[in-house]
Image 1 (cartoon, helix red, strand yellow):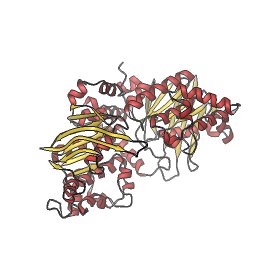
Image 2 (tube, rainbow over the protein chains, first blue to last red):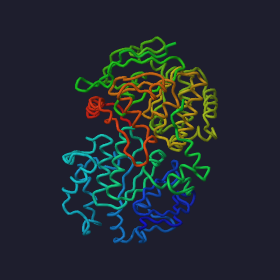
Image 3 (cartoon, helix red, strand yellow):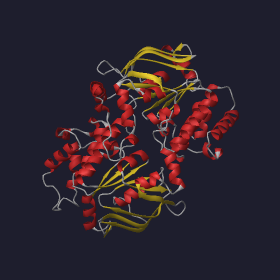
Image 4 (cartoon, rainbow over the protein chains, first blue to last red):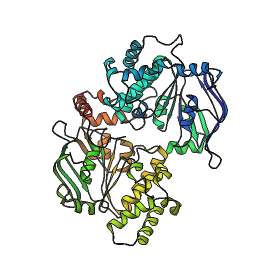
Length: 260
Length: 295
C-alpha cells in the first residue's frame, strides 16, 4: 500500500517582492514499510517537504495523499487520521520537548490530542502506554517524573522517539534526528531507531545531510537541490552509481578518513 | 619549537563538581595542527577556554599554560587582551553567536585590525577587503555591509575565519568550527581553513568530535575523556591502532560505513573495559557544568 504520495508539489514562501521557491514540482511515492532518506544541502527544501507530509504546512500547488486519501488539512477526519498514523521526531530535542512538562505528560500528550483521543485504536490507559514506550526506547519507567533538562542529549532524543511512538503510528518522520550528536550517542540512537522501525513495521521518512546515516538506515533515497528532485531510487543504486553530477558532488564532499 | 605547553592543568568549578580538566599536559609546536577529540562533556571546550583566558570567574585553575614561553595563567588582563586576537585567536563553533548581531561584519572585522595595529580606518577597511576577498566572500562590499543574520552559515564562518587569521596569529584554536554546517559547505570551509593556516604559518588546536574531520585536518591527535588526555600520537597511528579502550570504542562507533546497512552499530559500551570510564563520564555529565554547553 502506498503510504504517502506527492504529485507535482510546489511550495513558495514570501510575498510579491521576494519569493522563495522552497519546493519545485516534487513528486514522490513512498510505499508502506519503506525507509526513505531525504538528502540535500541546507536550503534544499528537505524540511519543507517533511513539514508538508506532517501536515504542518500546506503546499502552494500539487497534491498529497496519505494512504490514498487526499491530505485535506481542513478536514477533521483527515487530520485525525494524520495525527494518529504519522508522527515526527525533530532535530533538537532541547527545543522540541516542553521544558515545563514532565516526561510522562510529554510522552502521553499525543494521546490526549482532541483530534485522536476518541479514536477506537488509541490506547486508553495512558500510564501503561507511557511505561511501554519508555521501555521500548530503553529508558527506565520511573524517568517519567523527570523534566527534560534532567536528561542527557541522547536520552532526550529517546523521549522524543517515545512520544512519537505513543499513538501507534504507521509512519515516522524524522528531521535530522542524529545530527550534532557525538558519535557514540549517534550510534545508540540509530540502533534504537532501526530496531524499532523494523520490529514495529513502521514506514520511515528521514531528512538528513549525513549520507553515511542514509546508507546505513534507508533503503530508498531522494536527493533534493534548491527545491527540485535531482535523483531518487534505491539507496544502493543512487549512492553506488549516481546518474546526476550533483549527487556525485554531494557524495564527494563527505569528509572521509585519509587513506594511508 | 614548542609554541604552547600545557602542563598539569586542572580546572574545576567548585569543590562539589568533578574536575572538568584533570591534570592535562599537552604540547603544540609552531605550525603544528593538533586535533583534540572527545565526546560532549569531556572537557574539550574548557581546555580551549583555559588557553584563551575565557574561563568564567568561578573556575578554579591549577597548572601552567605556557604560550611562547609566557605563562598565560598569570598574565594580567590587559596583557592578555593584547595577545588575544593578535597572536592567539579562536574560531568558535557557532558563528551566529560569535559575531555581534548589531554590528555590520565589515566593521567587526576592521575592529580586530584596529585594536591591535596602529592604522587608520581606511587602512583597516582595505585590509578587511583584502582578507574577505581571499576567504571567498564575494561581493566584498556587499558582504562587509551586511549584518550577521543576513549571511548564510558558511559565509558567517568565513567571516570568523577571516577575523581569526587577519593579524597573522601563531596559534588558532578552532572549537568545532564546522559542526553547524552541512556536508558540502563543511568541506569548502575546512579547505579554506587549511589554506589560511598554511598561508599565515599558524599552528592550530582543532577541537572536534568528528574523527574524519580531524584526520583530514591534523597531523597529530589527542583524545580527551572525562577531563583526561587518554592517548596522543600521529593521526594515522591513533586512528588505525588505538591503544586505549576508549579510543578503540570511539574509532569503532564513528565508522558507520564499516557496518552493513541496518546492522547494529558498535557503541562505546561494547568495549567492556571502558565501562567504568563511561560510567565516570556519565556521572560527570549529570553534574551541570557552568560552561557554555555544546549545542
